[in-house]
Image 1 (tube, rainbow, N blue to C red):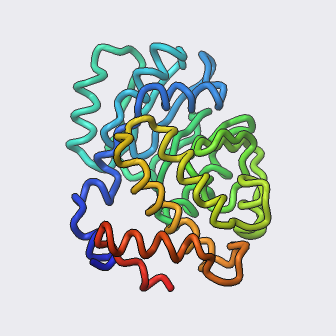
Image 2: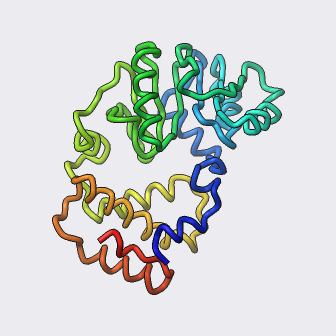
Length: 252
């Protein structure tokens, strides 16, 4: 089964991220790293099925106001229902591109679409006050360089530092000019473990699959350390093919 065929078997909500639910402890860690506090106004862009970000922001970190934004009206109705007893929690059924972010002091965004991230980076620059923080997972928006890193959680603070290209971002996040396969494996391992929701029996499979995808993407972006495909990559591609019926040889 080619990787595209494998992906096509996954539920649509998994691919879009609509069904992703962040664990409460992960949310608390994000908020602690970003120093979320009672003086802040918190915005969650593309909140999806995560009312806990608003609840924890208000009840545990005592922000002045917590706002969830999503284009899906059904999602917004569900968030309203689950947070209706909490004061100063609001929802907005609107596209983030047209929604004002000027009152936000801490924003959580996890969009993977490059066009959306470029648009948001411009809004962050033009609408937010100095001292505002952007929380993201895995990578910052556009070419922003993080001020705080506890991978996969990253925090950028305005005035933002901007990289010239992705190599600047890689160096800022991973403390290296390039990504080798060992780094790819370790990044995948930390990412999977950080959520604490993966069944241990599935961990190694996910680690293999994600580390390979990280390395191949790094190679295609010109930031892999190796000039040739390293032996461990070839070995794991064969393992996925013969034991899991997932064929990544198209990446060669």
